[in-house]
Length: 127
Image (cartoon, rainbow, N blue to C red; front, side, top):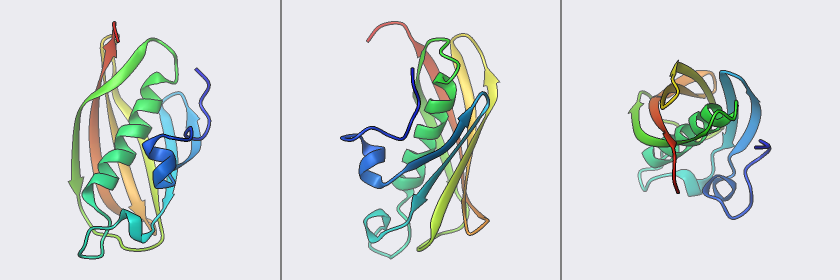
């Protein structure tokens, strides 16, 4: 599987999510915050953080092409709100098994930690 920026007609493309770097055991991405990413109170919506995390962890889990891994659990903790600037996501594996992988994603805004996600992924055998 070739990993480039997110294809058109996907959620990540629609959000403006950009892949910066991907390699074995590390993924980095960026999102420029716009009003479309915010909840009515003016801060980035929690679903935005969860979506970014799910994507970078999924890309990381599938990078080595040892099967097709999809997210089965996403636990995102919100630490500090953000309302402007960029969100930088960095994901690394905690555990990489043959059937399940567990990844952690940290999301920063202006070098300040805003959210931490743990995403568990399962190898799919049928679609």
